[in-house]
Length: 383
Image 1: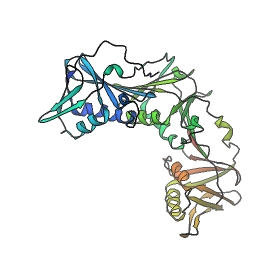
Image 2: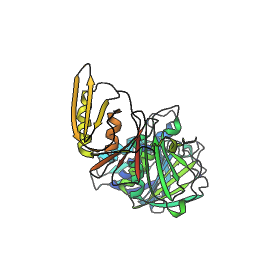
Image 3: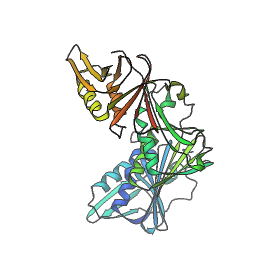
Image 4: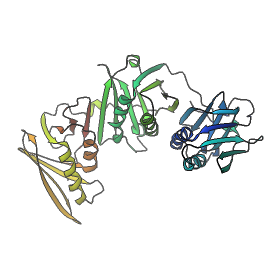
């Protein structure tokens, strides 16, 4: 866990090192997503710099998440200090590419001096002993997953995470091992649901069901974008740790029980509707412009091989477009939030979007016709 206790170390020594701009900038960039700028605890707006051997270790935390990056540096004096994460990032970001950056703290630790070429800056520091300690609990389940697979699980589901404060356990993605050998990710906000799965790594067969917070999901996704081909994940019932190359992300898990989502997936839907995914998305996007309601409702009517998509507003007028579809069931009408539909279409990589339909009052299943590893559930609305 991450505690507000001071670091259990000896009195700090002045720090002195030289580091290359781009490696420092990347680490500081990740810190920006973790550090809370508006915080009543000043030390949480700072990062901890620790110079030892031939590396610089940078740590940032908001007491819920901790990010640790180790990067090569020429260490002239081992020591540690803290500095404003935002200020250091903004200065380093605007220095010329290829710059070498010298960081040196004063003997009393109150100031950190940055020198790069003819640029010189002094930053006020806070005592490193005040920086929260990062304590990792015992994490009994550890497994490795290909970065592309973890990215896919996140990208296919994160748009359905909730923002609701009362049902906080929906404000993240639920990961668990399925009995039939898959690592599954599920997110829902109560009106829609996204589910994706990949083959379960053998070491993950006994992993607990966990809910990883929105902020953690966002930060690990950024790390995957930049770095390694493989991610090591370690889990307990209340903590998760991701190791991506030289970066470590540690986070508390969301407490609470994720709902029995399987019960809301209408597997009995027996009518199949297929439509060109891009044409459908483009049409819904255009039609929804005419809908001034904040929910952006659009109406879909399917009869024979034709889908009629429409929207109406007493303020702006109305719009109607038709699309050719494949459908053999009875005529059916239903309405949906246009934004929800467009979020789903963005996950479809093949030409065909498939809907599995029951009746007009039931949720529908949407999926890529050529990909059985992900599905989406949408609740209809009155239009």
